[in-house]
Image (cartoon, rainbow, N blue to C red):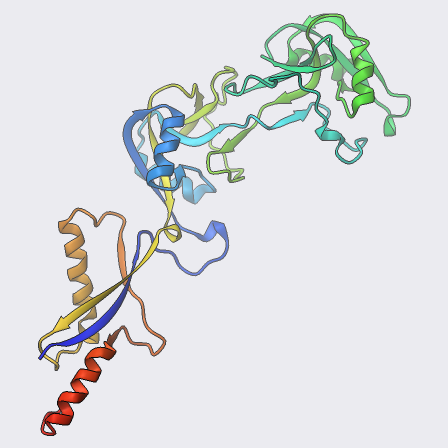
Length: 337
C-alpha cells in the first residue's frame, strides 16, 4: 500500500540569515557580457535581477572585483543626480526654513538632465536656466554679514566660467550669490543686463540606480572627469570612471538573496512504510537539486527544508490517515508504525 507524505520545501534563490539591517543582507553580483547603453543595462538588471550594481562598502567592492576579474569597461549603477542642485555658499545658517530650496527656474528648465555637471544662470526675466559650467558669463557675488543684515549683491562685469567666478567671489567678497526668496530674486533681476549671468547654484553629485544613499566611492585618480556629458559610471580595472551614458559596454547587475523567496508544497509517495523519511531528507534534497540541474535551473538556486512547528519536515496527509485507519479497523492483525 502506498502511504502519502506531505513535504514542504522552500526555494531561496539567494539565502540570507536573520538580519534587519540593510548592510547585513548578502549581495550577489552578476556580470552580463552583452554591450548596452547605461539605460538599457539598467532596464535589463531590473527585469532579471534587482538593479545595476551598487556598492555599499569595501566588502561589496571585493565581491564585485571577484566577478569582474580585472575586466575593463563595465557599467555599474552610479550616475549623475539630475535633482542634486545646491548653493556655492556653504554656510546656510542665514537661511530660514525652506529658503535653501528656493528655485526660480524658467519653463522647461533645468534642461540638461543628461549632463554630469551644470551651473545656473539668471536670465533678464529673473528666471533661471542651466548652462555648462565652462561657459564664460558675467556673475553676481554676495557680500554677507551675520544674519544677512546690511548684506549686498555685487554684479561683476567680467566674463568668467562658473568655477572662476566662484573663486573670484570667494577671494574678493563672500561667495557667488545665493538667492533665498522672491524678494532677493527681484533684487538680482534689476542688476542683470545680459541674457545669462552666473549665480551660485550648481549641480555636481552622483546617485545609485537603486536609489540607495551609499557614500562609498572608488574613483580612478583622474576621475570623475569634467566632461559634461560623462554622466554614467563604468568600472575600469576595478576603478571607476565616468562616461557618456549612450556608450555601449558590458554591465554588472546585483541581486539580494532575501528578495527572491518562493515556498513550494509537494507530495511524495513511498512504497515501504518502514522507510525513515526524516533520515533521508538530505538524499531527497540532493535529488531535487539534480532535477533542477538537469533542467538548467540550478544557478543561484538553493533548496532548503522548512520545519513544521513540531520540528518535523514530513507529515502524513490526513486523507490517507483516515483511509488507513479504516483498513486497520477491518484488519486488526495489521500493524502500523
